[in-house]
Length: 120
Length: 107
Image 1 (cartoon, rainbow over the protein chains, first blue to last red):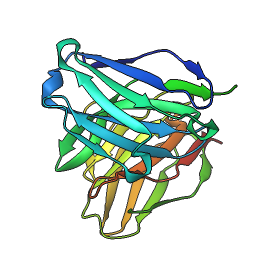
Image 2 (cartoon, helix red, strand yellow):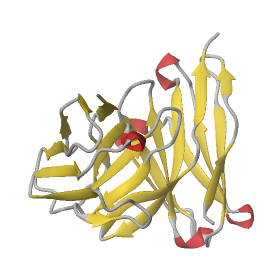
Image 3 (spheres, rainbow over the protein chains, first blue to last red):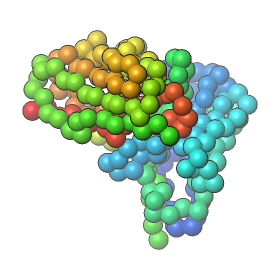
Image 4 (tube, chains in turn blue, orange):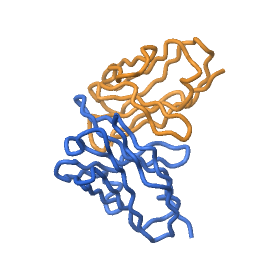
């Protein structure tokens, strides 16, 4: 069974950084892309970027360049996202989601999401 | 970026009713479209990909259609468990983008 298990909720101060994790199981991690997505309360979903589990190659939404940094640890089948210089605009739920290519990229499995709250 | 516009923003339907949700892309996306269902406090679930292909395990009352810039999701017989928010997503170009969602409730 494919599972994506995300780390717990974070409360961080403005200006700080946070590292989120997404531990996977049930599939060959190195054969798939992992995407990260942002959803603010009651709002749209935004794609932040993706990373290939095989070689760590990344692609980013221009909007999140400089804000998010994606990495992987193949040995533990875990994907990570660092968010830096946090502001209130970064308060949101963040999802990891496995990329599946049916001709075009979609997301067939999602983590449960992690709430990041930026507050002093 | 490709803009995805969904309509309506919300709707309510009776049990057994047929429901249709629309999604329009700002340019031709060549059927590179997916639909997701999200329930409160949960992560989205893939329903349809490639505009009309049903994801494994998704009930057959869900169907997708469309081409070019216009797409739709149909639920042929509304069930209680179909309440939630539905999003479309284009896969043609990066950055991947989503519609703003349609909230579906039972009447």
